[in-house]
Image 1 (tube, rainbow, N blue to C red):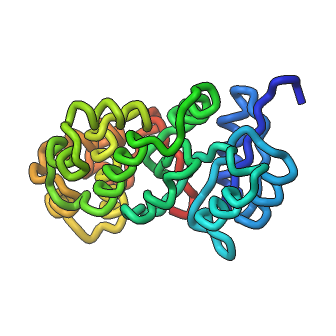
Image 2: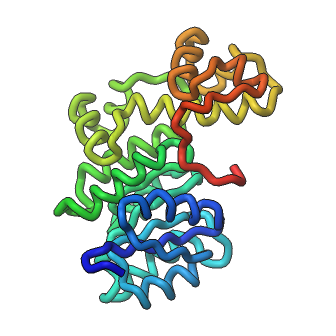
Image 3: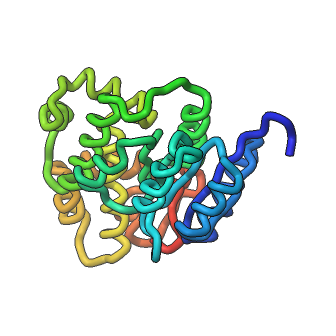
Length: 252
């Protein structure tokens, strides 16, 4: 291994996801060790002492929350920054459990490989205080979106729900995720809409309303911008090859 190369441990229970992350990080010279599940991941962390851990939450036997708790109990591992990369919808209580030592919380299917790489680089290059108030508030806003995405609400209402003005929330949100709150919200809603369209049980208007879009025309514009094809075309099975694919489990 070349001098100065950064070590990353990726703890996942999907080998395809480990391979994808290895490909993404390998292009920037990172040395990635994949670990299938929490127990194997803890062994890899204690053996390698990585610069960063990428951690899934939904894993059998020993889940990501348990891995975090075990890391914080050991002096040799408690200061290793962690990026959570999960498909699990997160509640306010979940986010509170992720406040200590977690550099970023990223939802699979919302962030492209390039955006994940940017968060990894950011976590390693910045002298960033983990567990800050800004991080706490942003993660509470993310939880609010996960829990209430089906309800129409504005950026101002989101900010009010977490006790901030909308401009300050937008600034904090962008610093933590690289996205604005509106972009994050739209991507999350479109992710749910894609699943509903693939099921084929609702028409376009019903899908729009079920995912928090009160205006079907606006829904169609946002869907086209995020996915690369119109909702109706997507429902027919058409896909846009040129659109950057979000980082997502094959099983989703």
